[in-house]
Length: 101
Picture 1 (cartoon, rainbow, N blue to C red):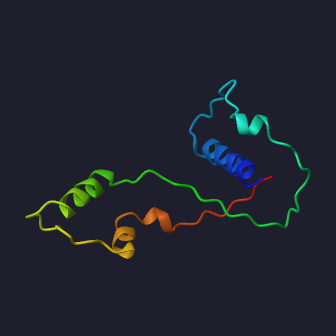
Picture 2 (tube, rainbow, N blue to C red; picture 1 turned 30 degrees about the vertical axis):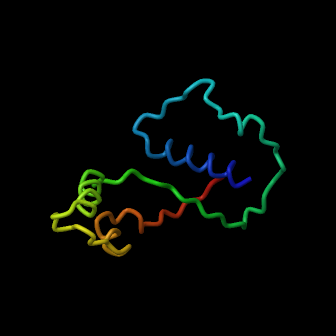
Picture 3 (cartoon, helix red, strand yellow; picture 1 turned 45 degrees about the vertical axis):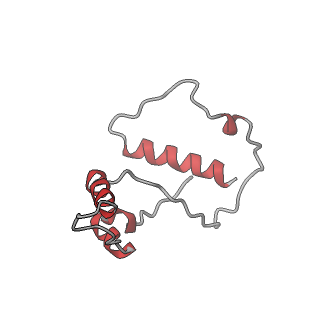
C-alpha cells in the first residue's frame, strides 16, 4: 500500500511542478498494474513520503570525497559531519505539506 501511495504522490508532485504536464502512454509500472485495490483508507490517516532530490553541488561533493582519500590534499582524512554536509544544501530540511485526494 505504501508503494502505491508513494507512486501516486510522486506522480502528483511531478505533475504539480511541471510547467506543461505531458501524458505518457503505456507507462504504468508492472507493480501498479498488478496492485490489488484494498478499498478506501481512513482520510484521517497521516502518511510520510520521502522525496530524494539531485544535489545542487554534486561536483563539489565529488571533489571533496576525492580529496579525503588523496594524500597531500588539505581535506585528506577530514570527514564532514552531517551538519556540515546539510549546510551545503538546505533543501533536505524543508517540508512541503500537501493533501492528496
